[in-house]
Length: 219
Image (cartoon, rainbow, N blue to C red; front, side, top):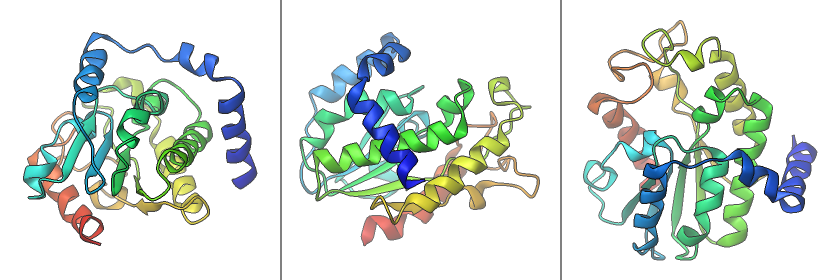
């Protein structure tokens, strides 16, 4: 995967216009970005970064840590995070926990390309703040029969992305956090205890995530 990711990173540096054109933020997204622009991130802070799965939790309360900052936006993609992350990383946070990619899956982007783009995003985070520890969450399982038909038959894509992210972690200097196994039923869908729409998490789901996350917050 190393050479493929390096080639992907080079393509981002050489032709960012195509990537920008492919991402179309809505009004809510831009309101959220403008809000974040007025909030500070400091060197002791821990940033939760990503899509609606990050946005949907009061992380600082659940983890009882006032240093945790939520920088999640509903509907975000890997490219969306890339375009807005520079202001966050200027604060040189101590840690960044990344959860993004499921919306890319729903947009019919190939799983290998999604994994490469996530690793390329990590490389970009390192370039902006070399001393920040970066943690990458696995994508979660889902149940497309409940609501999100755009994810139908894409369970294998999520598992493939997770495998690639796990394999690339040591080489690209990030910690991979496997949430998938803790949320999945034996048939590979998300446990109904943790989601009431087949994708987004209930309080029980976030409580489980927080328990799994706590050792990494404390290290």
